[in-house]
Length: 175
Image (cartoon, rainbow, N blue to C red):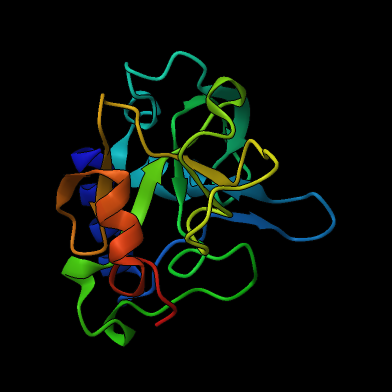
């Protein structure tokens, strides 16, 4: 996860402090990529997007942002929608007053862990979700009593569900 954080910083450095998007599609299908496609040029491999503790990682083929390279991916993580939206809009890193307190990426949940300890739509709500979407849930118990999260400043922290819920306004707010 730390390598993803380093790749995120290299991306935002090259793009004048703009953050990568969680997912992008031009609408005509010509350029579709997720965070993997945006960050691959800075990380150089896709295996860092897989957590060995994730028994049911989502497997798919991504593309680089220029749509020139297909990337087989086993994905264990998901972005927060506030920092990395699914839209044409990138977010500007300096807009966050405290990037060390804002979660960027967390563990993606799988069907077998639903509905225990999941936050809806990549953590834009504090309650457990009633449904499941392979792109939109955080698994909060991946490593026993908690899970690892990457913050916008690049540090990784292991957090328990009660800590995330109690600090929602700090960790998962709109900028």
